[in-house]
Length: 488
Image 1 (tube, rainbow, N blue to C red):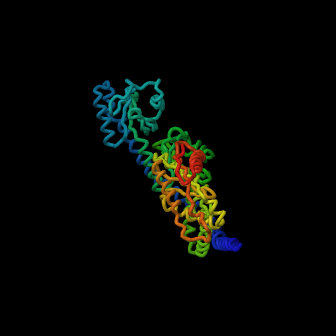
Image 2: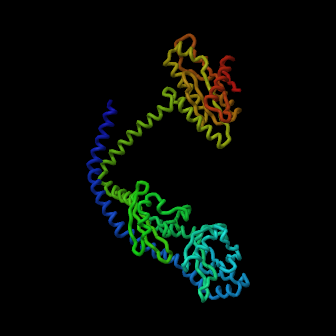
Image 3: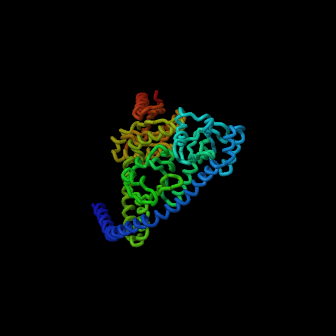
């Protein structure tokens, strides 16, 4: 009863200190902090980050656009096409120089006349309207665009996901000569976006005017998912896609977290830039910082918590020990032995090493109880258990199975297990009982042990293994005891 009272007092003291010193004051301060952080993110942090990323990303992706424009205006390329596309090596070398000079993943030209797809490696294929992979070409040349960006797999380079910058090539009279451009490896673009996340702690991705994701750190979303399909954004997706000149801010819930996002249209790319910040995560960090600041004032509470934890842990350890050990002998109990059996099976399956169960029953123990009493019988059990522990290994699990029965799990072959069983038999039979009893015959000297050994078989349950060991033990008893028998 005293123990319960002590714990109750500790809990009351802990509750009062924490309530007065932390909960009341911190709740008010946290609300003030939350409002301040929200205002700072919306008005300053997120717009500033958006501007930095916009400027950097525009610069990175504008460069290939400018190169593609230069290729489309290159007189060499136009003259080569109008001269009948003679000497394939010339255009191949030209495309290879563009690729190497600007470190692009790909450089290409598709002739509107021959429909040949020229790659820096050579002629890749003939474009055909029947090929669904070539649909982009016909869609682009039928549009009024001078250029566009297209995310697709590059057939000429083992289907690597690529951002293509496609440019229309025309002669002086405006007749279409073909389409040229360069390709950026999506992995490198996604890596750039990932750097923004590391640098600014915000999620960054791009989508086209229809909301289809074009650049994302998670490449599985690219060209497959729209922003309306992303968790939380569906409620504001329509408004996001209406952004034109000025960036705008939005808020939504995602997985229980409050998300703030700035959206801006990049004219050169014809894509929308999204910069997200998890406000809940930011507030969580702010809350942790606040908690660190007030820890000095909660020093007394910390002492109470430590005292409480020590007390609880002490009781916990005691309960755990009682749950898995035999109170009399200190050996494992049945529950612990069954738990260890599962571990032995797991280790055996991984390493291929065999293990065995030895079931033991003391011979002549009943006479000790009948002659000397149960208290003396308990002392005998403790003595024998201690001797068994000395001849087993630290990795073995010795358990009191009940009454005067013991069980041992040992990771060893049948021969080694038999040797161990024999050692146990000898140590029990040779137990010295130094303390004399004032009786004609001391029954302790007649104590021996019978041992049934069963080697684990694949997929055998504990009950099945125990049953085989028990049958072997039964044979021992039938043959007079004080011996070792192996299960069939």
